[in-house]
Image 1 (cartoon, rainbow, N blue to C red):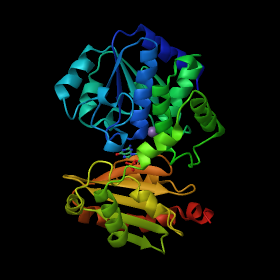
Image 2: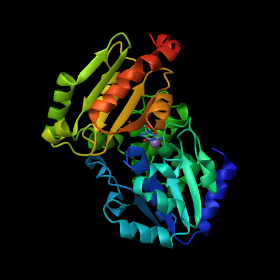
Image 3: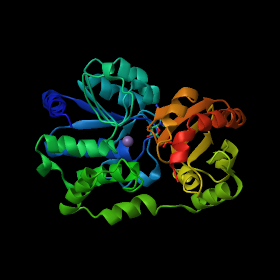
Length: 344
Ligand code: 5GP
Ligand code: MN
């Protein structure tokens, strides 16, 4: 971590009167984990901050310490607007461009105070921020929060609530410490959190052992009826329409992990999950090795992300999204044949 940037950010924090922490829309374990970790750390230093997110996180993250203190624009826009109007420092976590906060975009663009970014995604919109830590190789923003605390020599202020949030962010963004983005540093951070008394198996249980009956039935239906394996392309995809989601009373987060089930199939090197919403079809891409699914998301699906995990969308219904995908897929696979062949 760049020490100068970290110092500059810490100085902005100590000079601020009113701090708001923001993360991207459609929250995940890392956006909630990094936001609440910073919130708890600042709180341990007797620095108040308010966490304002575009929308609510899935139920499986509700147990996280501080979760009920998060304000969402989706549920109370006036309240979030008030907080941003009063704030003089905005700390943007786990995203790197104002286009990633949905309906809060204009609030960020019109924000008059200082703006800080701490993030690990590619292609940051650096001009938008007054100070930043941008480290795409790092597995999670939660790891960056740990490194930030460490850089200020303040690990003694990292309490168990903060530790639980950092651990959850790292765990959920690394497929439980399995992706290639995990380094010895990541494990050393894990070791530190355990050494101060974190019960990590409880966190795994709280995040992963929460499957509802509807969810398991939706998963079973999806894998049995909706999984398409294109053997010649070494690609698998899954699609779910609004009607199908409604049939299983699908809630936010219920389809989490489906795309990884497709990627886990022997011989499959890239997987796609398409989920129909009211006006758009949201698409998740996952890959093995060096297959650059972020390029595919960026070039054809108004999205982006990491090399092995990216997302985007198609405006319209499932039919048109599927049509677009199957038209583009063979070209993408051909263009990236070398990276496909590298994977045994
Ligand atoms: P997921 O498939 O879990 O929704 O997203 C995987 C990753 O892709 C996210 O961590 C994020 O980096 C990226 N991503 C997902 N949706 C979008 C999008 O609409 N735009 C951009 N730029 N990145 C996205
Ligand atoms: Mn992240």
